[in-house]
Each structure stands twice: as structure tokens, then as C-alpha cells.
Amino acid sequence: MSAAARLYAAGGVLLAVMPLAMVLANRSSPAVVGLAALAFLAGRWVEDRVALRAHLLAPLATPLAGAALAFLAWALAALAWSPFPTVSLRVLAEFLPTLLAAYLLACLAPGRIPAFAPRLAAAALALGGVLIAVDLAADLALERALGRRVAAFVHNRPALTLDLVAGPVALVLWRRGARLWAAAALAFAALGVLRSISGAAQLGLLAGAAMFVAARLLPRRIGLEFAGLGLGLAVALAPVEGDLLARMMPEAAHERLVQSSSRARVAIARSFGAAVATDPWRGAGTGTSARFAETPVAESLPAEMRVLLGVGHPHNSFLQVWAELGLPGAVLAALTLMLMLARVARLDQPDRAVALGLVACAAAIAFVEHNGWAAWWTAGLGAAISWLREAARPRAETASGKDGPA
Image (cartoon, rainbow, N blue to C red):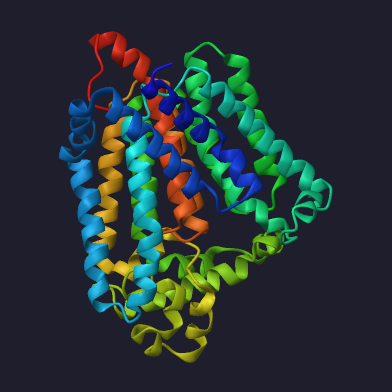
């Protein structure tokens, strides 16, 4: 085995076991994805360092990359008016290295992931789903044995990671004729998601599955327009989400969603929405959600609207963009999402359906949960995109007869 092949094998193992690593240590995905990216980077360097530059730079010449880089530039510019620059820098110090690792992985891993890795990933997904289900059924015996915090929500991040990765891994296996492996990956990942207490993970599973079915059954244009409408509304309505839900959500719905703290989530959304309405133009600054109750814009709100600004984030990444980066950040985020859909539109089936399922799953989760700058979330998305690109590589290489830029 050549040096490059050994590095690819190491990277493939790390990429494959990442979901299981998250079950065992629910903050581990940034480190695992970072090491996997370094392994593939080193392998490409050993294999052909001249071509490496094209693999890394070619994707940056696209409109999608231009919009994403403009968004990042605005986020960096927002450091200038952040009232808590240390907090902002700490957020970016966690997010940016993981984003770079995810980019390297998505550029360099496809076409070099070893043949054994998809089945290993399916086994990791299946074992991860089973461990979540069994641990919760056994009153978190695994967490007790490991000497960690005993709380059911420790499996929320792993469940969300299973959500993101299962579909793309199953697509790779399906393309390679391993249909039973693909089915097992999906079934056991779904078991872990459904058994977890994460309403966001379950919503993501439902949204992703529904979008996949719709994209398979509906004409290409209708499915893409539906996805575009959903993303556009998610961005545009984020500042008024709380007010809309407060008016439209019946009390019976709150009773059914009592474990998801729906009343508190609506109140949080209303508070952050009021802050956006007070200063919609530039936002409070990157990463300031962690201390938003202390920002100047929060001090201008009525006392009753400031209480829930101290929860750490608005439980809606689209609203978080508005609150921290204002109208320019929201416009650039929307542009990036639309250009991403344009890229997805060029895919053939079933790649397009799986990609749209991933988009719907991630958007549904982002609309109700987590901090949008979180490194574990970025790492999970990077791994999912890498598997999606891997699914298309064998066909692309066969058509071209050579390995082009990733």
C-alpha cells in the first residue's frame, strides 16, 4: 500500500466513524473531521501536489463560493462593532477552523474514499443509533459507566449528526449495489433519532424524508421551487417568527409540545425579533447571542422583552443571522442558499433528491435548534456533503476518463 493510500485509508476510517464518535463523545466531530481532512490533504499532497492547488481553488471561482465568502467577510467585519470582541473571537476561533476542515474534506475526499469506508460508515451509523436507543432505555447506563453527565439531552447532538449523514451514506451504498447496507444505515439511524428526546432531530428526519419523496415524485422545477420557497421564507420571516407563532399557535399545540418548551421558544423568538426590529441594519455583532441581553440594542427594549435574551442563542439560526449580522447578513445568507439550490438543480436523480432531503433536514433543524456557529454542526454538514460528492464521483470519473477538480 502506498503512502497516499494509507493516508486515504486513515481519512476514510475517521470520516466513517464520526457519527459513532459523536455518540460516545458529543463534542468530538470537529476533531474527527479535522483529522480526516488533514489525512486527505496529506494524501493528495503525496499523490500529486501540483494538482492539489486546482482541487482547492477551483470551487472558489464559483458564484456560490463568492456569496459564501462575502457572508464570511461581513461576519468578520461585524467584529468592529461587537460589544464583546473576546466572545466574538472565541466563536469564530471555534467555527472557522472547522469550516476550513469541512471545505478541505468536501474538496479532497470524494474520489479517494476507500472502498471499505461506506460499509464502515453504515456500521457506525447503525451502532450509533442502537447505542442511543439502548442507553436511553437503560436509563443512561452508558453515560454512568463513562462517568459523564447523566441527562437524556446528551444524545441530542449525536441524533442530529445521524440525521445529516445517514442519507448521503445510504446514497453511496445504493450506487455501489449495497442496498441492504443502505437500508440498515437509514433504519438504525432513524431508530436513534426517533428514540432521542430531540424534537429538532425528529423534525429534521421528517422534513428530510418528505423532501426526498417530493423530489423523487415531483417534476424537477416544482421540487426546487418548493425548496427555494421554504428557504426564502425561513430567512424572510425569521424576525417575525415569534409574533406569528404567538398569534397562530393554539394552546393545544403547546400542550402537546410541552417537552420541547414551545412556549419558551416562542417568547425567545419574540424577544430576539424585537431586537432585530430595533436595529435591523447591521446587527449586534458576530457571536453576540451568547451575551445578547447585555448588548446595547437589548438595553433599549422593555424589561419584559430582555429576560429571555440571556438564553445564549435564539434557537433559530436564521433569526440569529438577523440579530447578529443584520440585513446585510440575512441578504448574503439568502443569496448563498439560493445559489446552493442552483447547484443542486444540476444534479441528476437520485443525487438531487438526497441533496434536497439534506437541505430540508438541515433547514428544519436550523429553524428550531442550536447555535448556527457551532463547530459540531459545521463538521456534520461537511461530512454529509463529502459523502454526497462521493456518490457522484464514480460516474463522473467514468464519463471523463480522468480525475478533474473536486
